Amino acid sequence: MASPKQILIVEDDTHIAELMGMHLRDEGYAVERAADGDAGAQLLERGQWDALVLDLMLPGIDGLEICRRARSMARYTPIIAAKEQKIVAEFATVQGKLADIGGYYKADSEKVKAVMRPSPTFNAAIAAVV
Image (tube, rainbow, N blue to C red):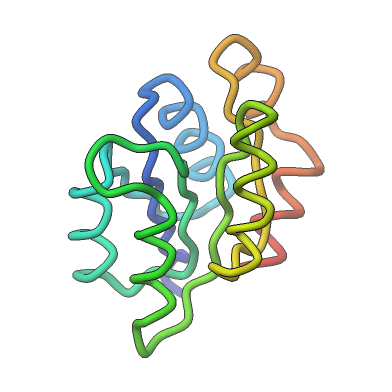
């Protein structure tokens, strides 16, 4: 039996991270979480990740810096990044192209149950990058 794909979630919103983690584990992925950019950067550099699910607005090192670090590594790691408020989303779209971000998820704490329940969009994004 093949070992499960390894996914690193770097998300400071505990509720969003827990729901994503539960959903991904239910889909058969192995998941580890970092709650801030500093811990996320350390885990990124230590692990062999099949995908990175990343909030762009993090305490400590921001998500775009983590993207840059991921892109400078020898092993390519697909990235799905948070797309939050309109201003952040516009910035993320422009900067995301520069950082080679493969997809986005909506990170809205009030709507997280609807966003993170098993959905074709989230499943397709994960399947496309892993």
